[in-house]
Image (cartoon, rainbow, N blue to C red):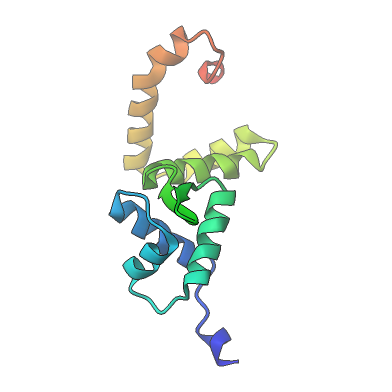
Length: 136
């Protein structure tokens, strides 16, 4: 089937829709997202993508007439961090996963991570909520 040959890689449409929402900086309806994409996607396809993103918690929505207007739940950096947490949560041995992740960082990224951890150290050490300071 010719349509299958033109099928996009998994996640590409979601990424395009999110990029359109981030660029807009205001909530968009599915029709507005469709126009912003300047693509030949059907509005129903865009609506389906937005509905899936909403189910994942990636976008929020508010009533707009008979439908919804959507906006990203986080900026792109927040979404990346959320995905990293989700991957980490999939494995019971968090220590090994983190150790492997850190061992594969470039020296620049390792220095950045050290600086971030050092800067957050006082918050970890003085925090009474028990979050994050246990590994230091």
